[in-house]
Image 1 (cartoon, rainbow, N blue to C red):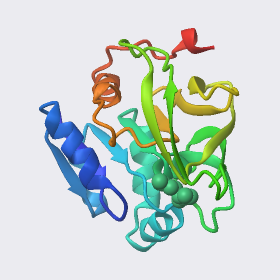
Image 2: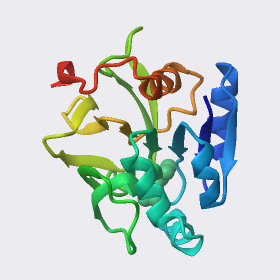
Image 3: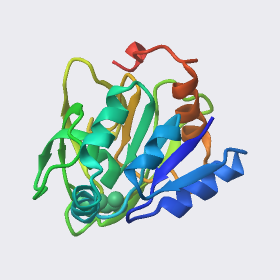
Image 4: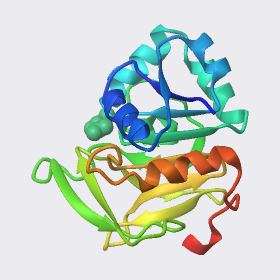
Length: 200
Ligand code: GLN
């Protein structure tokens, strides 16, 4: 099983380290042709406008859309979640636009550039996940095919899943808890129910 991490910009190395810590090798993806050999793909946090610009420049747009449509597991974290969303508030060029959800960038404003919160994630055993938010987006709304997997105390959605596609507004590669990476690897292996209906 080969997991790729889109390595155009952002914290792809931290994802690679987290995967290595659970015995999963990964490859840094910088050319669209590399996608063919992958079973799953992580799109990391970083700056979504920059990653979107590089996606366009290196001809990744259609290959990434095709990858998502192929049923292989894709996980967008923070900026990566922004790029997966069909509707984004304030992104000046197209991303991958595949998950049926609306995302607002930098939704916590300047006062809370960065914070941590304990999130109950549907389907994740072992108690709440200590999530690190860095200039994070929020998931404002999700379509009927998308399950909200995790929310802040006020109900704001910060983790969602649409079949093979996973999105988290926070940075699961930081903080030393590998459970979400383990969860992601099982999506590709088809061990989970296709819709986390229990999350509703
Ligand atoms: N604020 C960034 C953006 O909108 C995302 C931040 C992150 O990935 N940590 O692209």
